Image (cartoon, rainbow, N blue to C red; front, side, top):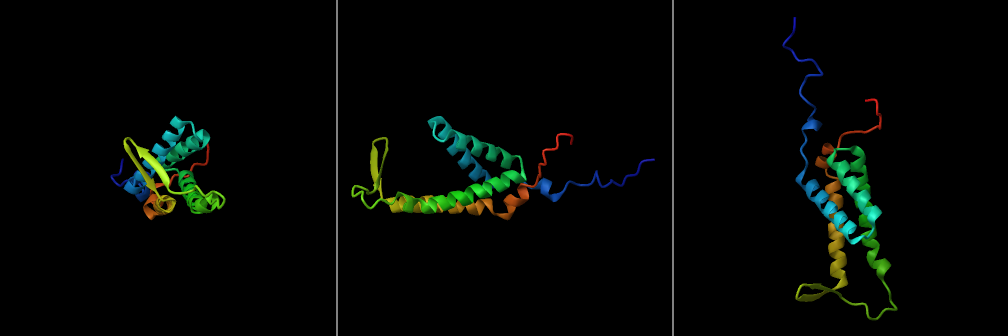
Length: 149
C-alpha cells in the first residue's frame, strides 16, 4: 500500500534551493569575469586572473567557499584602492598631473583625484554587493571534498 502523503525526502525543496541569482551579483560576476579575461588577453597578472575566474565559477556554483573568497577579494581590493593615492604619491615628481587617455580621435585629461574617487566608489559598490543578504542566501552549498558522496 502506498500513501499519498509525501515523506520528508519528497517534500518541497528548501527555500535556499529556490533562490535565484541576484541581478547585482550577476553584474558583479560579469564585471570580474570580463576584467579577468582582459587581463589574460593582455598577459598581465595571469595567475591572479585565473584565480578570479575560478572564484566566479565557484560563486555561480553556489559554493559557500566562493562567497567567502568573493567577500575577502572585495574587502582587500577596497583597502588597496583606498591606499593607492598614498602609494603613488611622489613629492619629488613635479611632472605628476592629470591622467591622459586617448579614445580613438578623442584625447582628454582627467585629474588623478577623479580617477581615485571612481575606483574607490566601484570598490565600495563591490563590497556592498558581496555582503547583501540575497547573495548570502544564493551561496549555500558547503563542499567538504568528500568524493564518496
